[in-house]
Length: 136
Image (cartoon, rainbow, N blue to C red; front, side):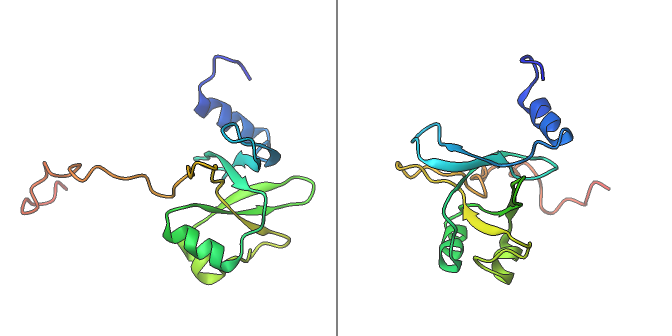
């Protein structure tokens, strides 16, 4: 990988090389141990997850607060996969993947964490006329 590559190109290269694996490291902000890796094969984000396994109550409360959760799978090559509301509703705190465990997005001591949904601009679609016919 070239140092002049964009972040998107570096992440795509990691996926192509099979380096989506999660590794145990420390948080750059607070120094606590975390699982760090890409959260998917397509449109991946670099994420940090807590090292402790979440319970069903932990995961439901975290999702209600907008905090992500992940399934950590694998033995020799560990991978993080983001869980959505359907996974949480079907089996909170339990992974449907063999040998997988559920972990929450890392939260630093100052309360900062990665959120599921970034706040959207409420005026984003104000310029559209709701009574106008569709453009297609």
